[in-house]
Amino acid sequence: MKPNFQQLPTSRIVGPEPSEIRAVRFDSRAVEPGDLFVAVRGTVSDGHDYIAAAVERGASAVVCETLPQGEPNPSVCYVLVEDSARALAELAGAFYGHPSRQLRLVGVTGTNGKTTVATLLYDLFTALGHRCGLISTVVYRVGDRRIDSTHTTPDPLTLNRLLAEMVESGCDYCFMEVSSHSVVQQRIGGLQFAGGIFTNITHDHLDYHKTFAEYIRAKQAFFTRLPGEAFALTNIDDRNGEVMLQNASVGRRATYSLRNAADYQCRIVEELPDGMQLSLAGRDVWVQFIGRFNAYNLTAIYGAAVELGQEPAEVLRILSTLRPVSGRFEQIRSADGRLAIVDYAHTPDALQNVIDTINELRRPDAQLITVVGCGGNRDATKRPVMARVAADGSSRVILTSDNPRFEEPQAILDEMRGGLDAAQLSRTLTIVDRREAIRTAIALSRPGDVVLVAGKGHEPYQEISGVRHHFDDREEVTAAFA
Image 1 (cartoon, one colour):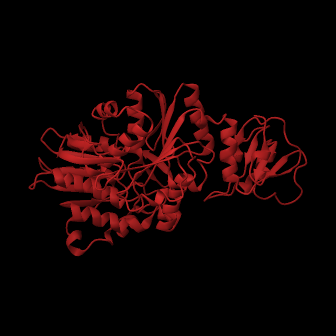
Image 2: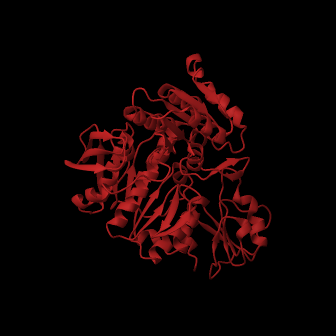
């Protein structure tokens, strides 16, 4: 790549500019001779502390916010910028030829529903005959090729590399989840979006954003940065739905709703254990999903497809053929009539939605036994709330380990138990070992009962003390039934 450092905002250049850049790096350990190193200030470490290491490994240019102490290396080009994270995003886009400008990129943001909306949009447009890309919590896809997902929204270099691969393989659409972290950390900086979708916003990630107001601002910033030719589709049944668009300068603002007048309206006509009859935009459609939360997701998907120019009747036809995303309200049945549901619900609102849906459908004499935990080194304020939601809506609750990461599992469960009163505690077991907790729930269930295993969904691992051990809730449920 021939560098053009002048395009970076507020840049000042010290030293000789290289004629070519071999690669862009933000990890000093990956630097090779001729590379450009971008010193990014992170939450755990500061890239400025590794400038000397990058130069020693052969970096010919360094982008940074402050010059390193002492005399700068006279053979290295130092580019001073106001925000190196933003600069990394801009450089990544330029290095890969700005791939987001060569396809229609749609971002989905919100607390819950991002994975379902992005994934089903990928499935829908693929069925419509388009070659598509997907960037989600569960998996990345370049056309038919699957790539293991590492983050909901990857770093700018990975993101632009994936988009470039999509362009190279002939994709004309990409649907991606946009996390609040990625907005604040400038991972999506420089990308050109054709549209943005807002699902909802509830209690989450306060370990990072500190306050709910900051969390909302992070989500809102995504819409503020959308280009004028983009569309923005928002859920106006969420009290912050219209807030998302307050400072947006998009060409088209559209709304969807199950309760209010909107551009795309939906109503649940009938709900059965194997699907729902919806009235969507004045047309009836049977879908293989259940739950009000899924009615919202499907309305967002329909609205986005129409905003992208697809024919409404054909969109509805294909919607009726789509199936739930892996680990989202995934049903596993035993031979004797018991039902287990594995779901990714890891926020109070998501857990409430799943429990409410199950309770609307289960027989009055059937138990709901919920197995749930909370992740370590994440927002601790939701732990007692999660336990209370589970206890309020379930016959029995088993609190267990989720991904404890670097925290003590029992300490997390003690915080969850702190949200329960004496009556709720009398219906609650605490079993640290997740495998044993799932087996106990299955053992306590009877034919007709429902066991909900919440929190991890599609994840095939359990993270303990920084190590990911293979663990899949679906495998454990199947084994316990057997």
